[in-house]
Image (cartoon, rainbow, N blue to C red; front, side):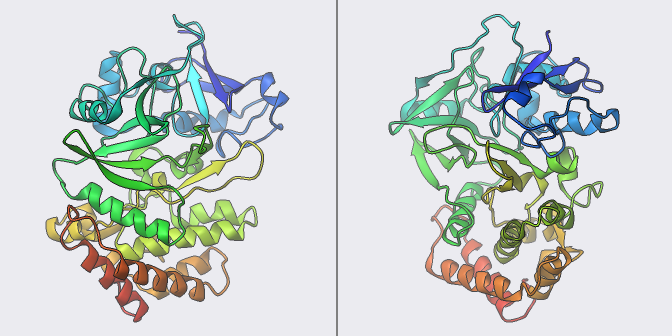
Length: 413
C-alpha cells in the first residue's frame, strides 16, 4: 500500500505515512500552502497544516483520522468486508475514505482503478427498502467494491444521495446527501423519538436541516439531511469534539477517561472570543436538558470548517429524548447525561441554576435570560407539536414535564 493521499475541499493537503495503527502519521504536503495558510486548522484543530509536525502530537493526529471511522458492529462489518482488523485504521481509510464526514477524502493513489470516477446508481424507494433490509451485508449502504463511504457512530444507518427527488446509491466517493436510519430491533420507537426531538430543535432554531419518517417499500426509515453538505450536494468540512479534544471512542462520555467536558468544548470558542459560538453551545445544552437528551456527547457536537472563514459550531444533530428509556429499563447510566452540567450528571436533578452556572463557567455573562427564553420556546413547541404515533407513548408527556419543571424553578425530573 502506498502512502494515502489526504485531500480537503478537493485540494491535496498531505499524506498518511505507514500502515501500522500505532505508528502511522500525517505529514502536510507543500501543495497545501498553495490554498491554505501555514498553521491553518481548517483540516482539524488537532492537525494544523505545518511544515514540520511535532512528534509529541502524533497521537492526536492519529486520533483525528481514526475517529473518522464508525464504531461497534458497523466498524466490525466494514473491516470484515476487506479482511482487516477493526483497529487497522490505514487500510480501512484506504477502502472507505472517499465519502466521509466533512470535506476530507482519503485514498491510495496507486490502488487499481485510481483515479476514481464518482457516480451514482438509482435506488428509488423500493431500492432503499432493499438496502435497509440487507444492512447487515451492506454496512452504511456500501455497494461491494465501489462503496467507499465511512461515517462515525454506532447506530445502524445508510448513506444515500437525493438527486432530482430520487434516491441514489453512491459509488467511488460521490458525496452522499442524506442518512437513513432503520428501526432498531431493541428500541422500536427510537427513530420516531429522534424525529420528534429533531423537530423541536429545528423549530427552536438549532438546525435548519430536516428529518422525517418515510416508508421505503414496507421498511420505515428516519431520513436526515446532512448538515455537512451544501444544498447542491457539495462538501462542508467538519470535525467532532472527540477529534478536537483528542478523545477516542467511548471517551466521548465525560465519565470515561475525563478527556471531554462542556467546559473544555467551550474553551475552544472562548479562546477565539466567539461569544456567538458559546451561546449556540448553551442552546444545545439547554435543549438537551429540556427534552431529556442524555446522549449529548463529544461526538454529537461538532465544528464546521468553511473553506474560507472561521470555524463555527455545527447545527444540532442526533437530538433524541431518552429519559423514557433510562427510567423504564435502568440503562443509559440510569438517566445520566453524557457530559456533566455544572459538574452534575443525573438528568432528573438538573435545574435552570445548573445550566446557568455551567454557562457562567465558560465566561458568559448573565446567561439566565437566554436560557429561560429558550426553555419557554421549547415548552411552547412541545405543547403544540405532537410526536409521530410510532414514537414512545410517554415521550411528549416527558418533554413537556421537563420543560415545565425547569421553568418553575424545579429539578427537571
